[in-house]
Amino acid sequence: MEVLVPFSTECPKSRLSAVLEPGERAAFARAMLSDVLAAVDAAGGDPRVLATASVDAALGCPVEVDDRPLTTAVNAALSDRRAVDDGSVGVVMADLAIATPSALRGLFDAVEQSADVSIAPGRGGGTNALAVDHAEFRVDYHGSSYRDHRRIADEVGATVSVIDSHRLATDVDEPPDLAEVLIHGNGAAAAWLRDAGFGLDDSDGRVGVARVANGDDAAIRDRDPF
Amino acid sequence: MEVLVPFSTECPKSRLSAVLEPGERAAFARAMLSDVLAAVDAAGGDPRVLATASVDAALGCPVEVDDRPLTTAVNAALSDRRAVDDGSVGVVMADLAIATPSALRGLFDAVEQSADVSIAPGRGGGTNALAVDHAEFRVDYHGSSYRDHRRIADEVGATVSVIDSHRLATDVDEPPDLAEVLIHGNGAAAAWLRDAGFGLDDSDGRVGVARVANGDDAAIRDRDPF
Image (cartoon, one colour):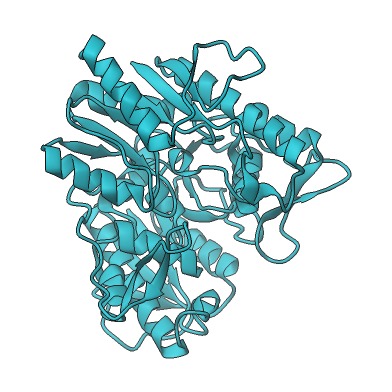
């Protein structure tokens, strides 16, 4: 399955500005992207980055540049794929920093086995990943896109499989999300955070992140990644 | 499998005080509890509420009163069960308002099939649910309990299955969590929110909740609950 991974090269991750400088946000976004590409590949997908501008470093997979808004660019890509090949196509967001091959395989398998569309909802009603095997299904990422995608599927008569995964539900946008990466991440994004001096901080009764002198706070990693 | 559902009758859900009055928080906490008990029962578990004080309404299952701190009370219950019966025991938090029988069955099956302990991590490093079939495993809910439970399992030589579920990862503590209930919930908690006038609000670009005149905003419910 070809899997599109949309990636914005401009002003990435602005909501992380409270804890990361602009250059750091760009580097962290790249680290997350590389984790997602690796997970897609290990899950049996063929990743292709759909970038808003050319990307300045080798990603190990094809990069397509389309600077149109996300919804427009993804729908154009879906249409192009359908004109060439009747297979299924995935769309996986570039900031799913704790996605695993296992979780993504669930998303892909659902469509390869029976559903027309599989959707992994994100926290807050977004759509973090989906896979499509239906000629009329189109994406719409504005607003509460999970419900919009359910509605669109209904309208075109596409069956939907909803994927229940904390890993796929976790897009990394805001400082509290960094804790999820430190707790559950095993790849470049988690390593980047630790190298930058981040560690878990539960000093106020809730677990967040803070930059500490020694970023290596976690004694247990997910040796059995779920 | 007997499944303990700890429930605090005092000052529930204080972090929801920005959007709910004290009486409302208590009523909403009760609605979530009833959803969790129903889901546990439908998943094949035998729910038992472990309450900090007597509960003033029929819950449809046994209620045990223990006003000691959560960790102490749960460990006492685990020890008691082991003295009587060598079977597995579950502990599922009372505010997992979008938990489904399917998600809980995954947690229970993992222990009934092979693992000594199954753990459903919550956002922010907590432990939202677990099932135990190991004589020495003990809980510790302080701080970053997911990592502590992994460490405890390591120390007693218990194998762990980590459950990747957005539904089980979502404990409802703060206003943004209410959006998850409105989007994915199908039970008493979602109904309570709508009756109280809550609806989704994405007016500032992110999906949250607001009290509106007509709480019925969702055209699509999870007809295929994941």
